[in-house]
Length: 168
Image: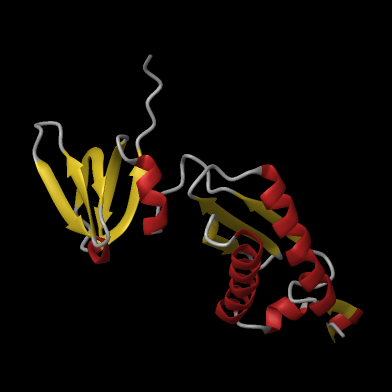
């Protein structure tokens, strides 16, 4: 039952649950569904949750994310959100791939971008630009403009952003 305050206005239960707990609950649902229905083909790479009950879930995979996967995951999440009212009675849910402008944050994303130009940010804040030439179990290797190779361990990577080029 939603909480009530001045003037009888209903408040979403979302306002009373810690956002980190809610993200964890939704994240567990996402990961469980993707593992059960798609094994290791797809995985969650991010989630945005706003106080206005807008939930955006980003998934990626070894292959490009298909619309059908997003649709099925969305329906799965809706059934839990509707039943438990974690975001209240009115919410907006979006499930999609992260898009070309979002940084790669999960090492499982790196492999499919070998050969592409990127900008890598280390945890320390250092930024390196170059072509992603190798992804290994514990590190990635970039080739800079001057053909120098830089190997960076996965634990030191904050994110990798693919540099889009529209040259022919």
